[in-house]
Image (tube, rainbow over all chains, first blue to last red; front, side, top):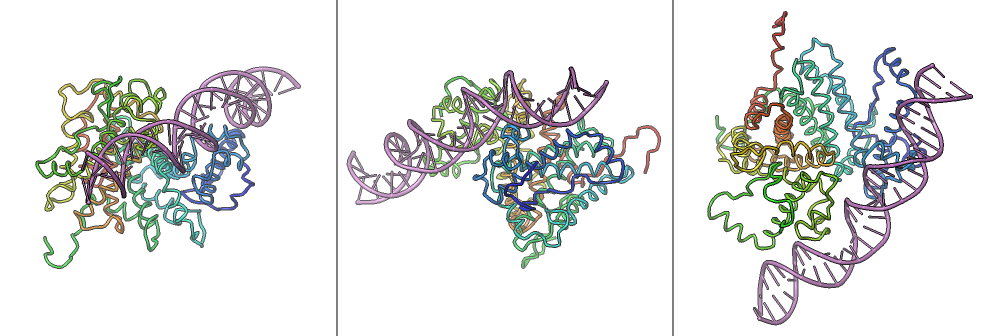
Length: 247
Length: 247
DNA sequence: GCTCTTTTTTCCGGTCCGGCAAAAATGCTA
DNA sequence: TAGCATTTTTGCCGGACCGGAAAAAAGAGC
């Protein structure tokens, strides 16, 4: 929980690292106190490890970071790192997992009367609309940020773990969807399908955002994806290329 | 390319191991000849390694299989195994990748005039409709088969690599979709979104199939998922539980 | 302060993982 | 068939990974 070494400031503030449920008023605070010192430290350590892994991977390059380095930067033993994560890749993917889980929790927290897709849309807007994919709010859209993420995401192991994190979080999302629609993820296909589809939409939007050559804002992409989904993903008019504007 | 040791017969014929493009007539055969001995052996080795990995993992348990064992069973050096796959998990996931890629190729091969979603539906029916998730055709639905897959899929590393395989294959599928709809995966969101969504639907169906307590056939699940998608995934009527059948 | 539980640490051996260069296999042409 | 170019396989090796086991340290509750 130290991180005093290198890896300064918000070096690699990306991949979905955001507010950690600093939400409402008293209730949450009570909960955090009741949580006890142990669990608080645990989460701090976890966050520090994940964050530091990302930062180091970005600034030194994936293969030039050993687990030993990360542990040292956070002032814990190498073995402790392994108690939290199975490897560097999982530590990085944890940031993505946290974000997706946050979305799921937000959906759960929406007013019960709100229809499913409104709740989902709202949750996604909260999580993605404002910024790019980075820090909460920074007028400077963090210049090299997108490139940095793109870089670490080239690593196969990272891709794999991020995908898995996505899937894990979908379990949570499926529960939220089940609760809202009166279905049960354990027995019904529907909630799992919706969770997976929402995950796919976010994934496609993120990928597009990450690779778009003239950069484009993320929020609208997510919205667009959701609109396509709602419409049943009809094939677009085949480009009014030249002749035959068929149909 | 030997596999003479243990791991007999179709022990672990699952995870999507199927026909390897034994498709049409002459053209394909020419292609296969022109392919040369090298590439043929290469693919055979790859397939044997993947298959053997799955078989051994199922019969001995994930952690009781070393790369060394797999290599030995296929009569290649351990180093050669690593030339093909980064690890056991990727070797297993390769089966899933092959299946998904096969779907993508089938979509590409459908008549150009056919609308996108018909082509997708047809491709999925070809790949999934007949059997469960196992060997091409066996009247005996391979009893312990589903359990075996469920078992290996509990391994985090396998989950991660399978997810990644899925994503990789989606790249191929996105191209096929782009070709059919006049969009470009490199610049448009649409083909990537559809590919990801189809992947999500298959994934949800497979998960459900894998866990359904009274087992259910896979084909209908896929169809159901596709129908939901086409309809825009509307929330189901909130169970006519007791009172208030709102709206 | 004294237990009880949970987390961190130390220690350690087996496995993984990939770079490198030699050797073997394949493809091609004279 | 011999000979050369290209590709694949192999052996060798050192560093990093990975997780089991038990002692030590740090909260939690009384």
